[in-house]
Image (cartoon, rainbow, N blue to C red; front, side, top):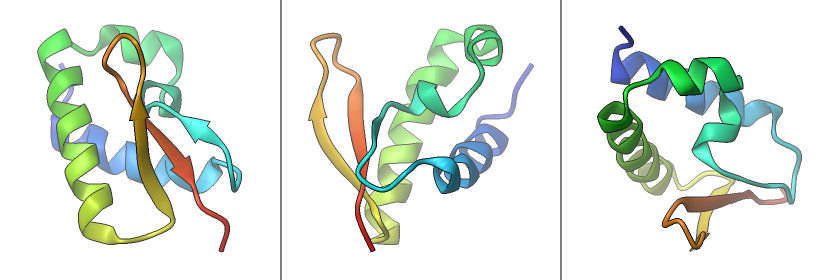
Length: 79
């Protein structure tokens, strides 16, 4: 249904809409109905790919703590 690499590109692009200092999850970067249509295995893979991409970029997105449901939280740094 969805290509994980395309979803990764969408997620990275959507981080531009996050405000400085805002904390978010990868699923927050998608509309609810789109996120729910992504297969669970693809959502897990997308989360891993997103974390790896953010770490490689050394940009203004930081991986912070995980939630109680083991979802990685991110924060957009101030410039």
